[in-house]
Amino acid sequence: MIDIHPDLRAGIRDSVPFYLGIVPFAMITGIAAIEAGLSPVQAVVMSVIVFAGASQIAAFELLSNSAPLLVVIGTAVVVNLRMLMYSASIAPHFTRYSRRVRAALAHLLVDQVYAMSIAEFSRDDSRDRLRYYAGLGLASWVVWSVGTAAGVLVGTGVPPELELSFAIPLVFIALLVPSLKDPPTIVAAIVSGAGALLAAGVPFNLGLFVGTVSGIAIGLAVEAWGNR
Image 1 (tube, helix red, strand yellow):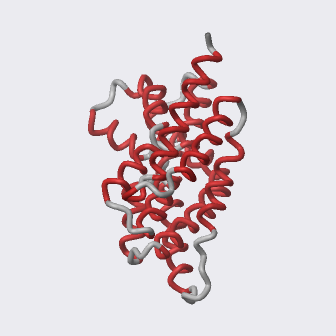
Image 2 (cartoon, rainbow, N blue to C red):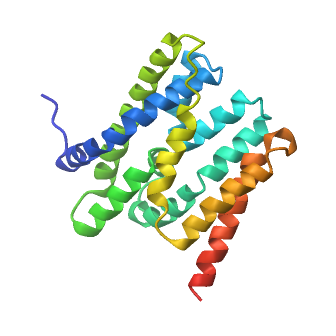
């Protein structure tokens, strides 16, 4: 029997509730990748390397519309900008580790892992940060990769006449609605949506990028104004 450190085991155990959200999201991402024209191998490898569902789906949507690669990359970066704030917040817990270790940990940083780690570190000062975080992140990453592979299998088995692209906006709506908790996020969502619609005709499929950046800028401005 494999002897697992208690803090690593605790991280794996605490990641289990995440799977209710990760598995269906991963399967939709796998299906979306096939819909966007990626091969099954490309879809799975991308999920293993990127491990960022919202950015991946945004990228698939743009790829399916033949957007330039720079636009695809730029949009994926903007969608994932919140990871900068997560990194700045959680980094003090890992300063004693090497850059190589911290880079590996950064790859496992997703919303659920960040939120659970910060809560646990605040609650239990004796918890081994590295092992607990690695337990959360590695387990989530494995489930995400397997879920994406399952979605790829489903996507490749669906007849072409049964379009599944409608699932992509549904996923974003499911991600968006729970986050609308205060005026800055509500304003940012409205401005982003309106901006993307108004900029739909912008060359190189930059409409989504323009809408996203506009929403973030206005949302930050509203938040700063509220803190005055």
